[in-house]
Image (cartoon, rainbow, N blue to C red; front, side, top):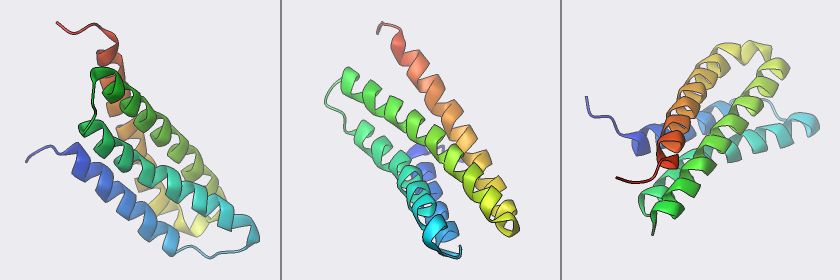
Length: 117
């Protein structure tokens, strides 16, 4: 199986959108759902930008943003899971994927700190 991080981050964003669309909306949850979707879809958007980076520094910066967006997404998933307990199984799956993406981007970022050989 080919490992395609661009496809994986895009599929994650799509899953986040589908999950968000299934949630009941009210004045309180609306902003949280919006923040969750923004952060979750931003991971893939920034990764796509990183693949077209103009320099190593630009690539590193985009990877760092990917990691930050993944960490932020974990926060919003936690908030939503506490507000919508009946949707916890879906949030648990999203949290797990977000955690894996965070670890992947952390590894990429730490490997980019060392000078090129």
